Image 1 (cartoon, helix red, strand yellow):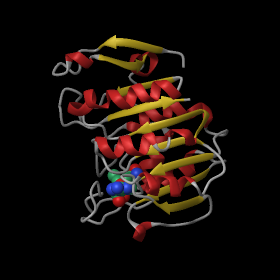
Image 2 (cartoon, helix red, strand yellow):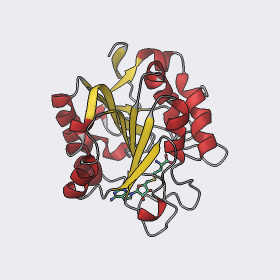
Image 3 (cartoon, rainbow, N blue to C red):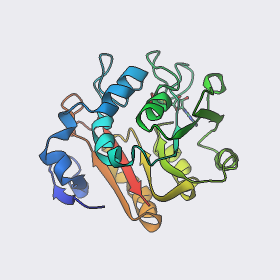
Length: 241
Ligand SMILES: C[S@@+](CC[C@H](N)C(=O)[O-])C[C@H]1O[C@@H](n2cnc3c(N)ncnc32)[C@H](O)[C@@H]1O
């Protein structure tokens, strides 16, 4: 992947051991994190919390995703997201009553006109099907549940987004048991990484670099969720095969 610049931003001055955060030069130079994109509008309209909206401003992932994925809008045919957005308060990483279950799947469907969008969640009550959207049960803490999910497919995915249970253990389990499902040239993204936990993710990064041509943790600038706040979670791990 071109345009990569390793810079010591100093953003994470409380984790200087991890200051070599990879960022895309022109994404930052052009301040693209502050520019609303088509994907920002689509995700906000669909009720996902990936984009800044009237309800939330803590994530602007869609500014970066648009930069990363815009050239594949018409060519991506298989997109998957773990984590559909339950409002069930008894399930961890729920949307606190403000979510629209399957909203992000509808957002991907809108952005990728030629894609079938697949999703999975531990909450069976929100599983849902419509034209170009199919969802499945999966508990990402259980390798056999993940294997059972993937046994439904005889193809690989252009994009896998992990927005399920936001713990390192859950992210690692799902990544280890899913990286074989990414197609050549495809992406795997882990969302909602807490900045104070970034050093812990080094083991996932090292594993990713063995099977992917590119893997980095990206701290996306967002004035509403500043990078020097250890509890900020506007950070993603991106790997490309
Ligand atoms: C933050 S929400 C997803 C939001 C949605 N992707 C969006 O952009 O609007 C996280 C989801 O992870 C699911 N989840 C929690 N624990 C899980 C687990 N162990 N396995 C799979 N999914 C889980 C929750 O049920 C919830 O729907």
